[in-house]
Length: 90
Image (tube, one colour):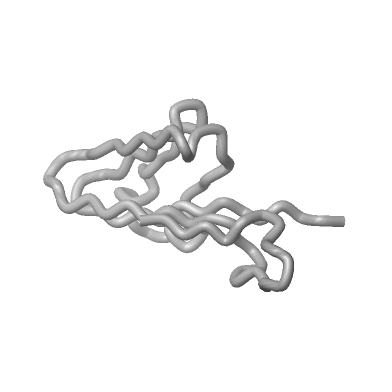
């Protein structure tokens, strides 16, 4: 599942989130690690959401994103949230 808010927005529409331009949520209900690759999500700057990075859950912290492949890897029976920070306009 993904939500795209865009880096620059559209004329006449306000951006919904001041921090993130994109969010990808991967639900893994399988008993084994899964990977999901999307050509459309290659070469992006996704990272695990800060709440999950700071979590005591070591399993969710092993979730990853490989930009060159557009590939997300999520441990067994885990939901991982990846975010792409909005470009700062000066």
